[in-house]
Image (cartoon, rainbow, N blue to C red; front, side, top):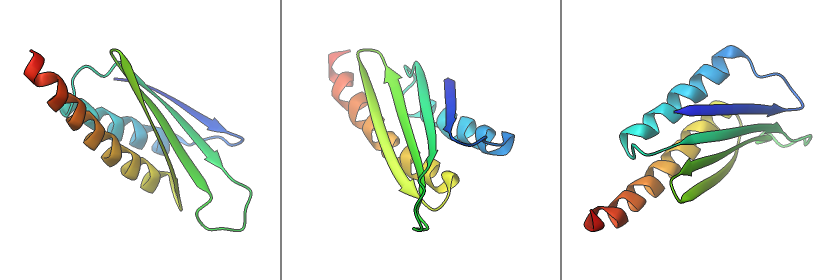
Length: 100
Protein backbone atom coordinates (compact mmCIF):
# COMPACT_ATOMS: atom_id res chain seq x y z
CA UNK A 1 0.00 0.00 0.00
CA UNK A 2 1.15 3.52 -0.75
CA UNK A 3 1.54 5.60 2.41
CA UNK A 4 2.00 9.36 2.07
CA UNK A 5 3.39 10.74 5.33
CA UNK A 6 3.37 14.48 5.96
CA UNK A 7 4.78 16.03 9.10
CA UNK A 8 3.52 19.53 9.83
CA UNK A 9 5.99 22.05 11.31
CA UNK A 10 8.71 19.44 12.03
CA UNK A 11 10.81 16.80 10.26
CA UNK A 12 9.88 13.19 10.99
CA UNK A 13 12.84 10.81 11.21
CA UNK A 14 13.18 7.66 9.08
CA UNK A 15 12.42 5.32 12.00
CA UNK A 16 9.02 6.93 12.56
CA UNK A 17 8.15 6.89 8.85
CA UNK A 18 9.18 3.23 8.54
CA UNK A 19 7.14 2.34 11.65
CA UNK A 20 4.05 4.04 10.18
CA UNK A 21 4.59 2.29 6.83
CA UNK A 22 4.77 -1.15 8.51
CA UNK A 23 1.73 -0.44 10.70
CA UNK A 24 -0.36 0.69 7.71
CA UNK A 25 0.81 -2.29 5.61
CA UNK A 26 -0.70 -4.62 8.24
CA UNK A 27 -4.14 -3.25 7.32
CA UNK A 28 -3.88 -5.07 3.98
CA UNK A 29 -4.45 -8.35 5.84
CA UNK A 30 -7.93 -7.17 6.88
CA UNK A 31 -9.05 -5.62 3.59
CA UNK A 32 -7.01 -6.16 0.43
CA UNK A 33 -8.55 -3.39 -1.68
CA UNK A 34 -6.93 -0.47 0.15
CA UNK A 35 -5.66 2.04 -2.41
CA UNK A 36 -3.53 4.38 -0.31
CA UNK A 37 -3.30 6.17 3.00
CA UNK A 38 -2.42 9.77 3.76
CA UNK A 39 -0.87 10.28 7.19
CA UNK A 40 -0.56 13.70 8.82
CA UNK A 41 1.65 14.19 11.88
CA UNK A 42 1.13 17.38 13.88
CA UNK A 43 2.49 18.72 17.15
CA UNK A 44 0.29 21.09 19.12
CA UNK A 45 1.93 23.92 21.04
CA UNK A 46 0.42 23.16 24.43
CA UNK A 47 1.83 22.27 27.81
CA UNK A 48 -0.28 19.08 27.73
CA UNK A 49 1.71 15.84 27.41
CA UNK A 50 -0.70 14.49 24.78
CA UNK A 51 0.23 17.06 22.15
CA UNK A 52 0.95 14.73 19.21
CA UNK A 53 -1.84 14.42 16.65
CA UNK A 54 -1.85 11.43 14.31
CA UNK A 55 -4.39 11.71 11.50
CA UNK A 56 -4.85 9.15 8.73
CA UNK A 57 -7.09 9.12 5.66
CA UNK A 58 -7.43 5.63 4.19
CA UNK A 59 -8.76 5.36 0.63
CA UNK A 60 -10.68 2.28 -0.48
CA UNK A 61 -12.76 1.90 -3.67
CA UNK A 62 -15.89 4.03 -3.28
CA UNK A 63 -15.12 5.26 0.23
CA UNK A 64 -12.50 6.67 2.57
CA UNK A 65 -11.96 6.40 6.31
CA UNK A 66 -10.56 9.23 8.43
CA UNK A 67 -9.18 8.59 11.91
CA UNK A 68 -7.66 11.24 14.17
CA UNK A 69 -5.89 10.37 17.43
CA UNK A 70 -4.17 12.59 19.99
CA UNK A 71 -1.48 10.87 22.07
CA UNK A 72 1.83 11.23 23.88
CA UNK A 73 3.79 9.75 20.94
CA UNK A 74 3.22 9.25 17.23
CA UNK A 75 3.86 5.50 17.60
CA UNK A 76 1.03 5.23 20.13
CA UNK A 77 -1.20 7.27 17.80
CA UNK A 78 -0.32 5.01 14.86
CA UNK A 79 -1.23 1.90 16.86
CA UNK A 80 -4.52 3.36 18.07
CA UNK A 81 -5.48 4.65 14.62
CA UNK A 82 -4.55 1.34 12.95
CA UNK A 83 -6.64 -0.69 15.41
CA UNK A 84 -9.58 1.65 14.82
CA UNK A 85 -9.16 1.28 11.05
CA UNK A 86 -8.95 -2.52 11.44
CA UNK A 87 -12.41 -2.53 13.00
CA UNK A 88 -13.81 -0.28 10.27
CA UNK A 89 -12.27 -2.37 7.48
CA UNK A 90 -13.58 -5.63 9.00
CA UNK A 91 -17.05 -4.08 9.22
CA UNK A 92 -16.88 -2.95 5.58
CA UNK A 93 -15.69 -6.37 4.43
CA UNK A 94 -18.58 -8.06 6.28
CA UNK A 95 -21.09 -5.71 4.64
CA UNK A 96 -19.72 -6.37 1.15
CA UNK A 97 -19.16 -10.15 1.44
CA UNK A 98 -22.85 -11.21 1.06
CA UNK A 99 -23.01 -9.34 -2.25
CA UNK A 100 -20.16 -11.29 -3.84
